[in-house]
Every structure is written in structure tokens, then in C-alpha cells.
Image 1 (cartoon, rainbow, N blue to C red):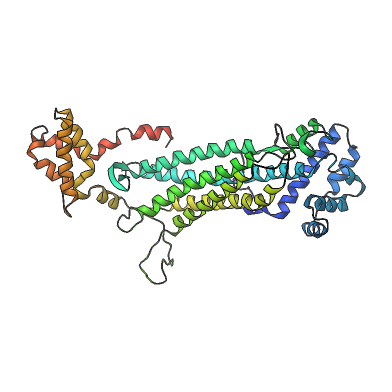
Image 2: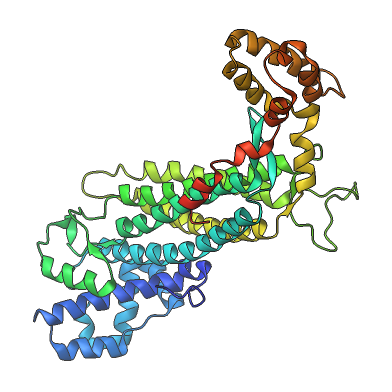
Length: 431
């Protein structure tokens, strides 16, 4: 397992220097494979491994003249290596290096994202444990529905993030492929055995059937998967924003000492981090569209995808990384107000227990339509009055009293009923 504390920073993985480093890593792995198979002298390999280097600024200087990034890179490497450099890039085409190295960057990025995702998972798990029995109101259509617990809400978030962890692990296998198959992918000037050995050294799998490039459905899946993760983070952020509304105030983002919410209104405490996460999710989704449009290339290869990927791949990785860090910290330090949750759940005298009353009446023999009408009448009377009390209204209704004793009415308003199967859900998630 990777040590999460020794992983590189996400931004470092998408620098020009790191990119060229992966290019050189691919070229040397191919040389090692060629030497093992007897295609280049072992003395030349030793010289290449000893001397091979690059200077990012020098590569840019050469590229300004030759207008080809890989040729510029190889020219600079050969300035370090000398005569043995003629064995570098033997039988390869540019995309062998570009696409295989890009796979290394994306796999490294996924390793970092998985570590940060684990932080978010643990933050959610902790809060779900803490608020397992903290009653809150469940809402549908934004309207009070029936009691839940805040921990139950968080359990749903946890389940979603665990699915994302599985997706990222699977994605690492899908994107962790290289191709060393030459121009148009036919292995005309290089053997499949070289590809197999080189990929093994790099920790990748050979692509099943590449053209001159690795097909961009893999890269589209990469971006779409991160966009989907962003959509889940947005769901959590929108929920926090709604629960922080002044008239709800069941949770609140941590507000640091000295923090200010408004230049005009000193009282303001705004859910700025959740709003920021919501906006970033929109950017991820927009990049998913561009990644899908990258799939359709002309014939065996064009380069219309590369200019897009230079923008969207660093963007989605860095954005997702930042969103995961923000999410973990936001949830870890989330302020939760159980008293406000209880107040909101019991407004209008517990109208949210209407289904329990309905079912109790039906179980006692009342016609369902009649029971529904009676319960709805009492509920709407409570709802339409500022100080309405559904519980009192039901307890005093003679039509209800014909079927339910006072103890049975009280039982309908016991929120513990809604926790009967909570243990089963928590066991599924090992909370």
C-alpha cells in the first residue's frame, strides 16, 4: 500500500519537468527491454542510463525551432548521452512516449486522489458515528417528510464515497496502459515483446489494440469518473448549504476566529466552502464533455485531442484533489446543532408522524381512504396555523379515539420507531 504521507503533491505531477521526467522514464524502459532482447548493446544501455538527462529550458529552446516537442526532447537528451543516444527511441513513434508517459502521470494522480478520498471517507465515517442517533427531519421535495437521523444522512454520503473509491481503483487499471507499437500501432519496426517488457518495468499493462495512439475512450472515462466524484461532492455541499440556511440552521460550516462573512453585514456567516465546491463541480462536468469529444479522431491518429488534454487533464486532477481536501476538512469540522434538528422535526406538533397514525388506524380496521382523510385534515389544520399542533389535534379527534387508545396515539409519535432498522444499514457500512 502506498504511504499517503510520501505521495507527491498533485500540482507537481503536472509540471513540465515531471512530464519530461516520465518521457525519459519511458525511453529508458524501452531501451532496457531492447537490451534484454539483444537489440541494443548492453554497454550502450549502461551509458544511456548513466548520462540521460534533460533541461526543460533547453527543450523549449529547441522546440521553438523544430516545432515538435518530442524531437526537441530527444535532441536535448542526446546532447547529454552522445553516441549511445542513437539507440534511444529506436523503432518508436512520438505517441509511444507521449501516451505511455501520460498513463504514468494519470496513475500517479489517482494514487494521490485515492489518499485524499480516504481522508474524506474517514471524516464522513466519524461524523456518521457521532450522530448515529441524532434525530433530524427527512425531507422530500424540500418539504418535511419523516424522521431520520443526521448519522443516517451521512451514512448515505459514506456509501457514495466508498463507491467512488471502488471506481478510482478500477479506473487505475483502465488507464494504466502503455503502447510501444510504433507508427499506426502495427509493431512494424518494434516487437510486441519490447512493449510487454517495457510496460512491465513501468508498472503498466500493454494496450490491447492501439492505433498510433491509445484510444481516448480510456481518457474520457478518467475525466468522467472524476466529474462523477465531483457531482457527489456537490451533492454534499448543496445539502450543507441548505441545512445552513438561517431558517433551518441544522449544521454550519466552521467559522474561524477573525473570519468575516460580508463587507456590509457583520452578522453574516456564509457557507462559502460549500459554494466553492459547487462551482468547481461545474468545471469538472464541462471537462467531461471535452473528453468525450476527444474520442473521435481521424483514422489511426490526429492530434486534435492533445491540445485539449493539456488543459483538462491537469485541471481535473488538481481540481478534484482540492475538492477532496476541502470536503474532508469541511465535514471534519462541521458544526452540528441537534437542538435545531429536534425543533425542526417537531414543528406543527409532529405532522411528520402522519403516516404512523394512518397505518395505526388502518391496522385497527378503519377504511384506508377514511383514515387518510382524517389524518390529512388534522395535519393540514396544524400546518396552516402558525402554532398548530398535529399531536394534540389527533389526540382530541373523536374519530381517532374510536380506534386508538391514548397510549397507541402516543406510540405513533415515538421517533424511535424510525431507528428500528438503522443498525442493519450501519452494519453494511461497517460504521
